[in-house]
Image (cartoon, rainbow, N blue to C red; front, side, top):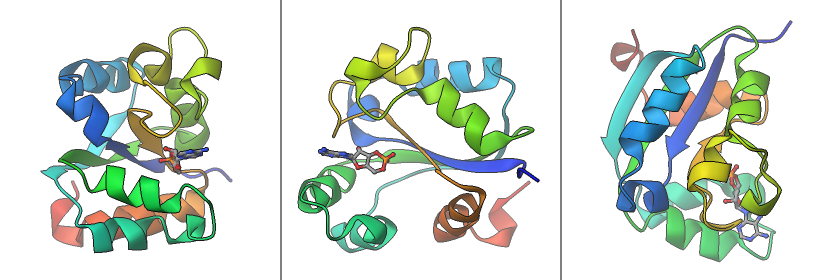
Length: 139
Ligand code: CMP
C-alpha cells in the first residue's frame, strides 16, 4: 500500500530566485499537509551523505556543490499516495520535459538546478525525512 508521506526540499536555486512562497502555495493548493518544515543549509558533507545513492554518477560533485551552495526549505508532506502525487506535481527531473502546471515547468532552470526535490519511493521518503527532522519537529 502506498504511503501517506513524502519528503521535499526547495533547492538553493529556487530560494535564491525568490520562489519559496509560490512553491509552497502550489504544494498547499495540491492538497498536501505540512508535517514538518525548516529553513536550513546543508554542509557539503551533509549533501554528500544525503545524495550518497548517486555517488557513482558523473554529476555527483556538481550536485553536492549546488545543494550546499545556499539555504533550502526542507519539509515532510502528507497526502494519500504522497510520493507519486508529489512527483506528478513537481514534473520531470529535466525541466525541458516537465509538463505544464508543474513546479519544475514554472521554476526550474536546468536538470541540475531543478527547483525542488521529491522522494522517489516510500522507503526513501522515510529515510530522507529522518535525515532532516527529529520526532519533536513533526506535527
Ligand atoms: P533530485 O530529484 O533532487 O535527485 C537527484 C538529483 O540529481 C536530481 O534531482 C537532479 O537535480 C540531479 N541530476 C540528475 N541528473 C543530472 C544531470 N544529468 N546533471 C546534473 N544533475 C543531475
